[in-house]
Length: 185
Image (cartoon, rainbow, N blue to C red):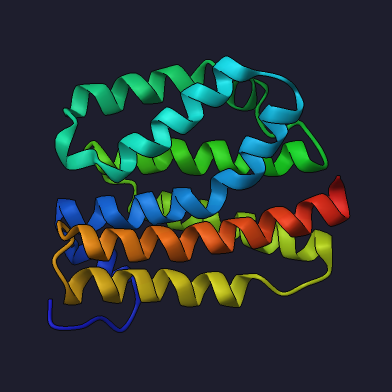
């Protein structure tokens, strides 16, 4: 791929490594609120399961697809995904974070879930922005496009690139967490 015009082009043509990098980056943006809610609830073992799943995403090339699937099964049993979207406030965004993490694990395991991962995070940013009175979706669209562009223009296996993606996504996740704490906390 010499370049992309849309995320859909990336979805169609991404290699497994590129798709995994995209999924990990999406998950990194989504998990801050999830981690906050789970920590506030004192659910240490759940937090460890979620953080372990996130770390696995960033080193997906060193992990067997079976371990990625095991992580998916594990987080499916946790409160956010067993209760589902019948929650409000910060818990609604924790649910969205868990769904994004789940779909990112599917992407990294080689599944066809890039669209789901992208859409879940777009929905998350739209809903959070609407709830907090700020416009987040255009920025999320721009970051997803930038992630895809970076992944196709560089080797997705390069630690430097993955580090940049993670750093950028973590900063966005922290800003979303700050909004959630301010408006939902």
